[in-house]
Length: 456
Ligand code: SAH
Ligand code: SF4
Image (cartoon, rainbow, N blue to C red; front, side, top):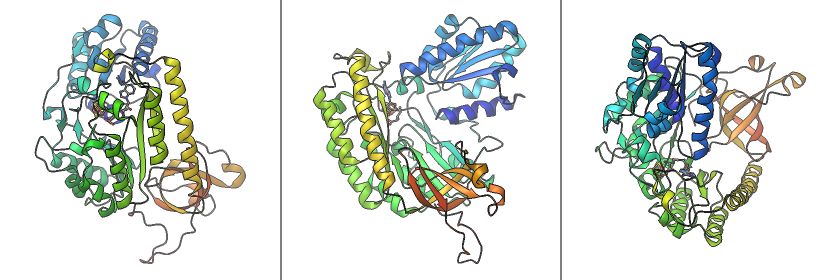
């Protein structure tokens, strides 16, 4: 979501003549887009801003702006705390950013804008970037959240849930597909409740419309709240070819007692039931999740329930976090805070178990052929010269990362168009990625050589 918001910020600033540059030392304006989800992210904001004081001393004309969730949460307090800060713009103020920057440039002064629109105005003027970077793009379909999980700051800093009209979403995706984008990820805090308040039809309806857009090869979405995962949406994994067989379904805890205190509004059994239904409709679906360890009051037994749930689900990957107090979220006032050392130990145990599970699942794929969308040359391009190969990176529909070697003499010097989909035979498995070799190209049924670049 922050990547998407940063693109929007850049797009707005381009309208008043700014361009992105590759070093803050060359910048006339530094914009920091911030996250408030955990305390650590927030601390980084202050250390980054502290470091800008020197820059501004050398070049007083430099402007420094802060946007995103920390800006929304702290507002004027940020200006008071950071004397060299010029502008604070909240999560609903991106559309007004360019005007604020121009005003400061012309008249000087400092501006704080943390007004919340409280309606669909937040989507006005949302536009894709002029020059798409790479074959995959994010597209926001809703903002805010109405769920009020007790640990979470999102409803307070992003406001109430608002869905974007389907016509706007579809025209943005058509424009992206027209400019060469092959994969879109639809974004919302809980896409499963898309359009419910506005009467736009269900999220499954929207997916069906998106999957009819010419030129798109792959569709993904994130995030799904388990309580709102409908059978209609589950069925889409079987019915829509272009919908990638992957769902990120954050469970947070395997203990009913903790889930209740988190206000997640599902029980462990409900979650397991939905996982079962997903796998019966789509046996090779990749399922990933988020966990919080050390939520206030989490006992050893509660944590054992979480470990037990992980063993029974066998996730394809997880993100796990130590619980972090967020002052505006209710859990910050809950009794039974867990010691840091206990949180660390639980996190390590959970991640260790997941590493074993992922490695085992990845090993089971050795010898199989996976459809991989090429994203670009791999950062691990180490054996290129010696083996006359170029190492590329891509993803399977299940979102597994695959590194694959292109034989430079037969593959145009190791180059190919990002977004091409290849059949890759998997030869080696690691805990966070796979390695393989593209299958020899054969003419397909249309007599053309190469891989079918339209099927996910
Ligand atoms: N809307 C999404 C997630 C948003 S936040 C959802 O409901 O799934 C992303 C993840 O950050 C959450 O899933 C949760 O695991 C984690 N998180 C949120 N607040 C947190 C907190 N106070 N401490 C630790 N982790 C937190
Ligand atoms: Fe936060 Fe819960 Fe909303 Fe996700 S669903 S953004 S965790 S309040």
